[in-house]
Image 1 (cartoon, rainbow, N blue to C red):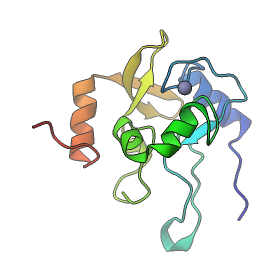
Image 2 (tube, rainbow, N blue to C red; image 1 turned 90 degrees about the horizontal axis):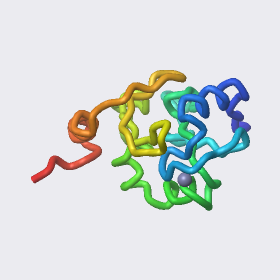
Image 3 (tube, protein in one colour; image 1 turned 135 degrees about the vertical axis):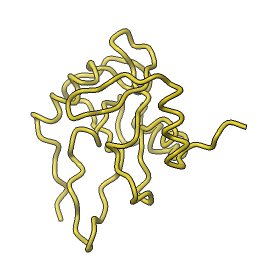
Image 4 (cartoon, rainbow, N blue to C red; image 1 turned 90 degrees about the vertical axis):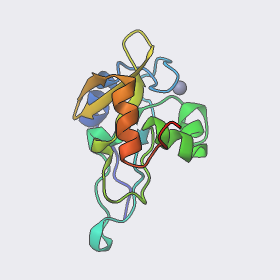
Length: 142
Ligand SMILES: [Zn+2]
């Protein structure tokens, strides 16, 4: 099956939500920016390909699949999972919409968020980390 492109409307919405900043390093990204799929495309239930181009599954990152932060995230799945930049395809009991993400605020500073469509809601780091622990993505602090 052909890979479905992220529509222009979705791309603009996600970039606007993310303040046109790479959510890992805070660098400004343009309209042509690569979109990170937090959960990679794969098989859905019953062997069907499911849509992965919904806003909560998309994140603005600089670079491409092999360069910049997009490349870094691709190369560091476990650390990226812990920051919500990627969501394991093995964790079928929850979706990317349930996983907070460590992004960058309008000043380019790190901030945890819940993603809700083309909106995002800031959450305290403590809350986000507790959620990550509850989902089994992070280990509880000793
Ligand atoms: Zn970056």
